[in-house]
Length: 385
Ligand SMILES: [Zn+2]
Image (cartoon, rainbow, N blue to C red; front, side, top):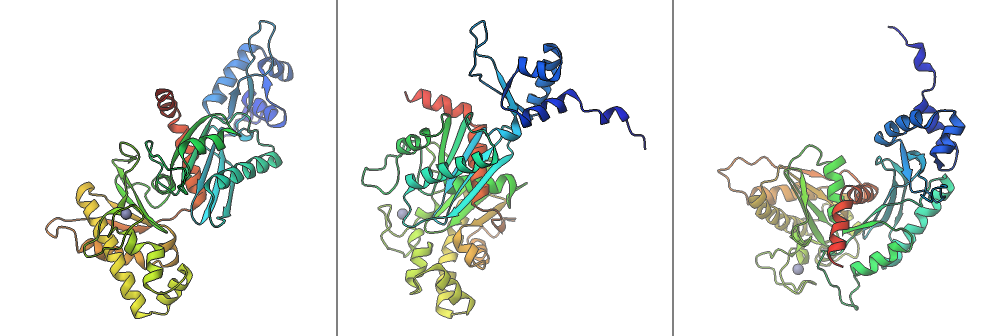
């Protein structure tokens, strides 16, 4: 094995990243002077570093003699480019990502109850900024923000002023108090599904049905490696498919929806318990009535998944949410319900797997999605003006 002794000498690129890691954002002239190189040599090195997402160019706040704002450069390790905040009924999670997608700050706290969505967003924004400040992360140049909420957030949604759900405008208003950038708003379920598809249980599957069983029932679809929101962002409302012989009124205005049979509150009511942990204890103790109620409800979830599978032919079903986290057996019950509703003559290969990732991954997916879709978000908001 040969070792190149020249490699031991710090390259100009190394010197630049090291300088920017220890100093405030610097201009080209400052870097040339500090590192004693010509503008041309520096320019070549800076370009390489920017292409590798190791250095970020910022708009300058100082002016050159010609009156043009000079560009400042900083180390990507110190500069937050995007924010992701995801609110779920169990927790609030937030991340700051660098331009290259590295997690600079990650923060999660248990959800307060009852949840005030706007207050939760505001509090998580404040927490992220505070953590960033103590860690020396620059947050003045955040360009994209991804937000996830556990309520319908389709682009044409209009929640009444008396609704407990926030409007898109009120979310944008709260976020814009801290950051100016392109804001992506979607459901927590869809962003969690995106995180699973990218980095979790769904990795490598071209088509996925992601089902989230919590206080409500939501779903997301990945078809040919693309997670679709549909025309207005209303794909995957699995919880509002009707179940035969169920007539309970649903909050959506219909009756007999899957959610009225298989959501956590409805399961607790049917099993005469007041919380999910009590329900899990009864399952653990093999309480036969509880098991039979659960099997019936999860059979119905499986049947609804089968209806979806007949349309989209997924390779995997990812079962996520607080219910499978507390009672892992529900995925087998869903798999059983699914099998009995598929067409026997066709050879189905659908893996039913449990989700692997938590709320921080969903927040990371929110920030990631806001980066990758920034140009389309901008076009959309300009189109609505
Ligand atoms: Zn409904």
